[in-house]
Figure (cartoon, rainbow, N blue to C red):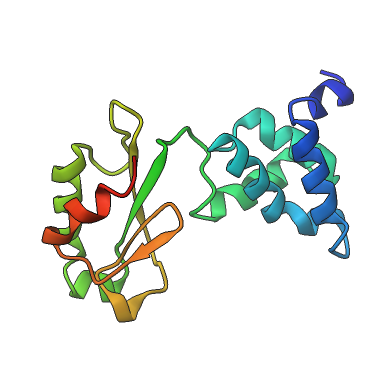
Length: 162
Protein backbone atom coordinates (compact mmCIF):
# COMPACT_ATOMS: atom_id res chain seq x y z
CA UNK A 1 0.00 0.00 0.00
CA UNK A 2 1.43 3.37 -0.96
CA UNK A 3 1.76 6.23 1.53
CA UNK A 4 -1.11 8.10 -0.13
CA UNK A 5 -3.41 5.08 0.03
CA UNK A 6 -2.41 4.48 3.63
CA UNK A 7 -3.22 8.03 4.68
CA UNK A 8 -6.54 7.82 2.77
CA UNK A 9 -7.73 5.44 5.50
CA UNK A 10 -8.32 8.65 7.45
CA UNK A 11 -10.98 11.16 6.44
CA UNK A 12 -9.97 14.67 5.43
CA UNK A 13 -11.64 15.92 8.62
CA UNK A 14 -9.61 13.51 10.76
CA UNK A 15 -6.39 14.53 9.01
CA UNK A 16 -7.19 18.22 9.50
CA UNK A 17 -7.94 17.72 13.20
CA UNK A 18 -4.76 15.68 13.71
CA UNK A 19 -2.71 18.29 11.86
CA UNK A 20 -4.21 20.98 14.10
CA UNK A 21 -3.33 18.97 17.21
CA UNK A 22 0.21 18.36 15.93
CA UNK A 23 0.70 22.08 15.35
CA UNK A 24 0.45 22.71 19.11
CA UNK A 25 3.15 20.31 20.28
CA UNK A 26 6.94 20.38 19.92
CA UNK A 27 7.09 17.32 17.67
CA UNK A 28 4.46 15.38 15.72
CA UNK A 29 4.59 12.14 17.77
CA UNK A 30 3.62 14.19 20.83
CA UNK A 31 0.14 14.47 19.31
CA UNK A 32 -0.30 10.67 19.34
CA UNK A 33 -2.87 10.41 22.13
CA UNK A 34 -4.95 13.28 20.80
CA UNK A 35 -4.79 11.80 17.29
CA UNK A 36 -6.03 8.46 18.61
CA UNK A 37 -8.85 10.22 20.46
CA UNK A 38 -9.83 12.15 17.32
CA UNK A 39 -10.15 8.99 15.23
CA UNK A 40 -11.87 7.06 18.01
CA UNK A 41 -14.41 9.85 18.47
CA UNK A 42 -15.32 9.57 14.79
CA UNK A 43 -15.24 5.76 14.48
CA UNK A 44 -15.80 4.39 17.98
CA UNK A 45 -12.54 2.43 18.05
CA UNK A 46 -9.05 2.28 16.53
CA UNK A 47 -8.45 -0.35 13.83
CA UNK A 48 -5.05 -1.66 12.77
CA UNK A 49 -5.42 0.32 9.53
CA UNK A 50 -6.10 3.49 11.52
CA UNK A 51 -3.02 2.84 13.67
CA UNK A 52 -0.89 2.58 10.54
CA UNK A 53 -2.34 5.70 8.95
CA UNK A 54 -2.09 7.82 12.10
CA UNK A 55 1.47 6.63 12.71
CA UNK A 56 2.53 7.49 9.18
CA UNK A 57 0.87 10.91 9.45
CA UNK A 58 2.72 11.62 12.72
CA UNK A 59 6.06 10.26 11.50
CA UNK A 60 6.29 7.30 13.83
CA UNK A 61 6.08 3.54 13.47
CA UNK A 62 2.82 1.66 13.81
CA UNK A 63 4.41 -0.36 16.63
CA UNK A 64 5.23 2.81 18.57
CA UNK A 65 1.69 4.13 18.18
CA UNK A 66 0.15 0.75 19.02
CA UNK A 67 2.18 0.64 22.25
CA UNK A 68 0.65 3.99 23.20
CA UNK A 69 -2.86 2.91 22.17
CA UNK A 70 -2.72 -0.33 24.13
CA UNK A 71 -1.30 1.38 27.23
CA UNK A 72 -4.28 3.70 27.67
CA UNK A 73 -7.50 2.11 28.93
CA UNK A 74 -9.72 4.59 27.12
CA UNK A 75 -8.41 3.82 23.63
CA UNK A 76 -10.39 0.91 22.23
CA UNK A 77 -8.55 -1.41 19.84
CA UNK A 78 -11.61 -3.54 19.12
CA UNK A 79 -15.16 -2.54 18.18
CA UNK A 80 -17.31 -1.53 21.13
CA UNK A 81 -20.99 -0.81 21.60
CA UNK A 82 -22.56 2.63 21.36
CA UNK A 83 -21.89 3.08 25.07
CA UNK A 84 -18.92 1.75 27.03
CA UNK A 85 -19.61 0.87 30.67
CA UNK A 86 -16.49 0.72 32.83
CA UNK A 87 -16.67 -0.50 36.41
CA UNK A 88 -13.66 0.59 38.46
CA UNK A 89 -11.87 -2.22 40.29
CA UNK A 90 -9.25 -0.15 42.14
CA UNK A 91 -8.49 -0.90 45.78
CA UNK A 92 -10.89 1.80 47.01
CA UNK A 93 -13.69 0.57 44.78
CA UNK A 94 -12.94 -3.04 45.71
CA UNK A 95 -13.24 -2.24 49.43
CA UNK A 96 -16.50 -0.40 48.77
CA UNK A 97 -18.08 -3.27 46.79
CA UNK A 98 -17.15 -3.00 43.13
CA UNK A 99 -17.54 -6.76 42.70
CA UNK A 100 -21.19 -6.49 43.70
CA UNK A 101 -21.61 -3.51 41.38
CA UNK A 102 -20.00 -5.37 38.47
CA UNK A 103 -22.30 -8.37 38.99
CA UNK A 104 -25.31 -6.03 39.13
CA UNK A 105 -24.23 -4.38 35.88
CA UNK A 106 -23.69 -7.79 34.26
CA UNK A 107 -27.20 -8.83 35.33
CA UNK A 108 -28.71 -5.54 34.14
CA UNK A 109 -27.23 -5.52 30.66
CA UNK A 110 -26.73 -9.26 30.18
CA UNK A 111 -23.03 -9.41 29.32
CA UNK A 112 -19.75 -10.19 31.06
CA UNK A 113 -16.66 -7.94 31.04
CA UNK A 114 -15.22 -7.68 27.54
CA UNK A 115 -18.55 -8.43 25.88
CA UNK A 116 -21.01 -6.28 23.96
CA UNK A 117 -24.79 -6.59 24.10
CA UNK A 118 -26.46 -8.16 21.05
CA UNK A 119 -28.02 -4.79 20.13
CA UNK A 120 -24.60 -3.06 20.33
CA UNK A 121 -25.95 -0.74 23.02
CA UNK A 122 -23.37 -1.50 25.72
CA UNK A 123 -19.86 -2.90 26.04
CA UNK A 124 -18.79 -3.76 29.60
CA UNK A 125 -15.12 -3.26 30.47
CA UNK A 126 -13.15 -3.38 33.70
CA UNK A 127 -10.92 -0.41 34.41
CA UNK A 128 -8.07 -0.28 36.89
CA UNK A 129 -8.84 3.19 38.24
CA UNK A 130 -11.23 6.01 37.43
CA UNK A 131 -9.59 8.37 39.91
CA UNK A 132 -12.82 8.66 41.87
CA UNK A 133 -11.83 6.99 45.14
CA UNK A 134 -14.00 9.43 47.07
CA UNK A 135 -17.01 8.18 45.08
CA UNK A 136 -16.38 4.43 45.35
CA UNK A 137 -17.67 2.18 44.01
CA UNK A 138 -17.55 4.13 40.80
CA UNK A 139 -18.38 3.46 37.19
CA UNK A 140 -18.19 5.43 34.00
CA UNK A 141 -20.41 5.27 30.94
CA UNK A 142 -18.80 6.94 27.98
CA UNK A 143 -17.45 10.11 29.58
CA UNK A 144 -19.91 10.35 32.48
CA UNK A 145 -18.71 9.35 35.94
CA UNK A 146 -21.14 7.87 38.47
CA UNK A 147 -20.49 7.14 42.10
CA UNK A 148 -21.00 5.91 44.61
CA UNK A 149 -23.25 3.51 42.71
CA UNK A 150 -25.58 0.96 44.30
CA UNK A 151 -27.35 -1.81 42.38
CA UNK A 152 -30.65 0.05 42.87
CA UNK A 153 -29.19 3.05 41.00
CA UNK A 154 -28.47 1.09 37.81
CA UNK A 155 -31.87 1.20 36.09
CA UNK A 156 -31.98 4.99 36.33
CA UNK A 157 -28.39 5.33 35.16
CA UNK A 158 -28.63 2.87 32.27
CA UNK A 159 -31.87 4.32 30.88
CA UNK A 160 -30.00 7.56 30.14
CA UNK A 161 -28.06 5.77 27.40
CA UNK A 162 -29.94 4.64 24.29
